[in-house]
Length: 44
Image 1: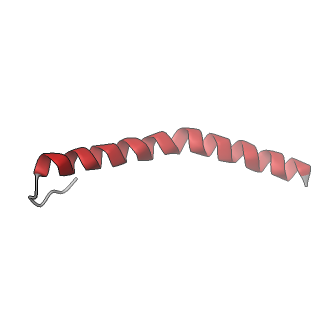
Image 2: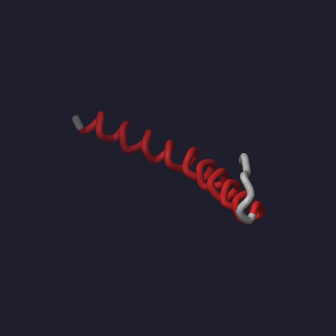
């Protein structure tokens, strides 16, 4: 049980470190595109 918990924690930490910045950058890019549009229809 403890080993499974260790591997889960390790995987979760690696997952957050690799994928959270990518999602954050994509979200920031999307909001930048929306800010540039100013009411027009935009496709990110």
